[in-house]
Image 1 (tube, rainbow, N blue to C red):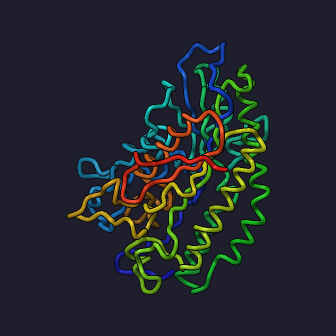
Image 2 (cartoon, helix red, strand yellow; image 1 turned 90 degrees about the vertical axis):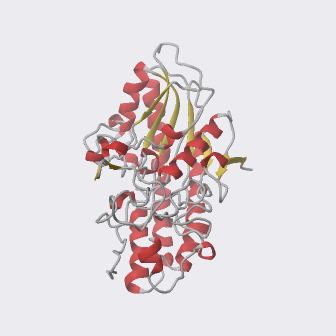
Image 3 (cartoon, rainbow, N blue to C red; image 1 turned 90 degrees about the horizontal axis):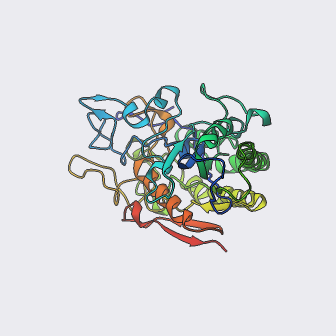
Length: 382
């Protein structure tokens, strides 16, 4: 791949999408006397991947203009953000969606999501699930939690890795940097081919989670389930602050995509996946939260935001809410790329809080460019 003096960000993290479910009124399971709990499950979009970062900066030293929360005492300590899960690669951050949601009624918040997980890593072992990164299948972990805590809300993000979305991103970056061709025709075919199977697996995951709850005596309607879709980490071509030609999208912005591919990802791919996930949610009788516009105006390279500098520190109103593309050689790990950063996770946390106040219906959560995570708004989908 082509390099540059400032270090090209060509590593691609598995870009995954987020899902969450609510099912019923949240009535407590009578046999459980432990604390009320909300549990987040699934992949990197809900585990808290990239929560280390407050916006993005091209400064490769020190605190990176205040964006690197892992810079402590003159050294980098990612475990300050991710805890022991940094060593396994699950990367459950302190700002993960479930931790950032203000005002949740439940007294305990448990995050068992793991970066890189597929539906097979969430299913109960009895349903064909598998261990992942040294941990039991997540639905089996849920059953253990539900046996002692009164689980009222389950939030799941899964499906993106089943779709092979990281391969799509890699191909699109390579087509921009190396082949000078568009990725979207071939990748649209690949996604269309994989989508039915991936959505079937998401449906099986919901069934397996319900089975795990039933194994602990929870009745249908005694806990809530929300299925949540994916925000776009990159803007439309007309909202990209860097020229399509030259090296600025690579060297400065960390968003190396052709205009045509950016528009396809933003206006075709993400909505198509959201629509498919809503179909699964409706079929399974769970609530749906559409997040495709949750980072609108705060994406990587958006005209509405900016990189942090030594004179302009990161700000939730003006900084990017997703991690730019990085090889991991100079700033963090490559798997953090294109995930909601600490600001983005705070925004998704506000979305979670907003939908928990809605007992039914499908909803969309959208941000406001130029404002912080607390300005997220919810609108009902028709």
